[in-house]
Length: 75
Image (tube, rainbow, N blue to C red; front, side):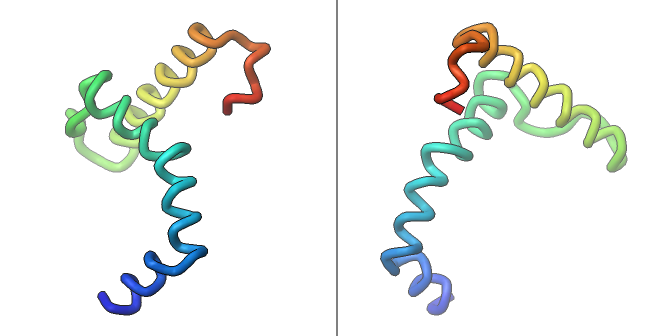
């Protein structure tokens, strides 16, 4: 725990955490709260992977619909 706290509290750790908050975390929050995927409904790795990929597909299609294909700079 102490080693991880030192990594996170370092200059490079803070930079990585701040990037993560802007790039990765909003995607998971959107899929979990707005799309309603709090837990998977299926059993088995293959089925869960398929369900996850469908949710990711919907998320990316929504981004294309909202921002259009010319807004590549946001991603």
